Image (cartoon, rainbow over all chains, first blue to last red):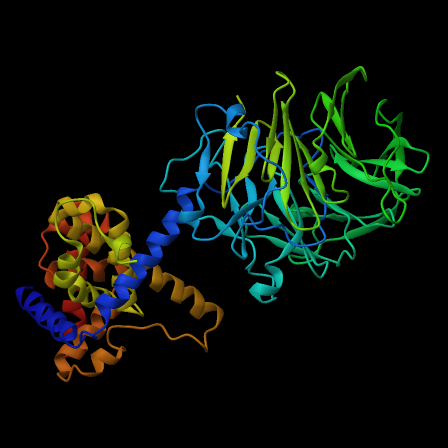
Length: 407
Length: 171
């Protein structure tokens, strides 16, 4: 045995001696370490992504109107002057911050899910960020966020898919539409990517965690199943689609699972259930009193925004923001938005458990938001994007972002 | 950007540790059969940099580096085996006797022994390399591989017996 051990030592030493040092190992290590440090800085921001397994259905899912262009970069000028700070509404556990200096690029929030996970653009890349689980915000260092613009089953070049013009998010999935109208659904882990037929001229996009719903200006809806439910997908890269036509109504929001809130030319509020062809009308109601004359877009469809949580629906028409109790249809507070936020089609309304956030982008790319606390009546005007979902509030702060739990 | 690399934790300077042990770890990865030993060692040092508190204790830092290299080499081999199964004609699994370095080993008896080591189960090969090339104790070997001391003894014993049998048959 000793003989074999000695021979092993000799053999290993002989083989090891054949590995010759190369001159640039230290330089290469320095480069790798710098890259690693940069990644960690980017993530101090974040707590991460995203094993977001079980979701509590919410009354109205996230998503909304598509913007005509990619989300405005954080460096665009403000549309309003700050009055208050969204941080005033968040608790002591947050906020979690992504300062621009650490990300090295401007950061722009794009969509927020009720569990606190959110989509954000860092430079030219789309990232999924958010709390690691439940309501715990992880302390740095945190795992790497997932990039959405390089999915393994998506063959387009990175720069081609890296500019989503519309996005929606649920705890189970996020839906992205790029400038060519290509629609894809990425599951919460960022691994399963389902591509769908292109959605031309997108007006709005929503997801309930099982379907991607895209509205066209003509009033038709493209309902794409298997987003991200693999059981409903015919194959790994292609989901199924249904194109549904609402009866000359303008879809405004997705409520619950496949219940679309729309406004027809009569000015009433109609909710359609979508799994049927044609969609069935589930509820017909009046628009909230006080909405005033409904604004119309250039093509004549109502220019309204609506969103809801489990107790309250919220409507924005021009400068009017109306709230309505869902249980007894009693009118809630009616508010007047700042004039600067009356910009037309580029608005986005989100409602969390207790907070309303309305963000407007003008034709010059300037952004401003109005935030309202349903419990206290506190109003905040903020020069950046603000999103509310569940118990979370996400806002743009200069070139950075902040996420906090509403207290 | 150089300030990004600065280590705020007092202890062993990272650069000195790299200078002293990098090539030893590259050789360790090569002996364990990694397809790109230098890349394995580079990654190990980057991981160490993320856990800078380990630099307070040079022994802990080195133990961490060894364990990282062992794990990375093993997972690369596993990955390559999977790839080879999928694309049998495209991927060639590296072996100690099949690497360019081994071609420089000109003694037939050494080549024969290295081929026999290649044929051993992965764990047995790891134990032999750590015990007889790095001269680690059984305890240190167990720590590096994340296994019990008794398991190290068993693997070493079986490996030596297998090598003895192989050499006897080929003699």
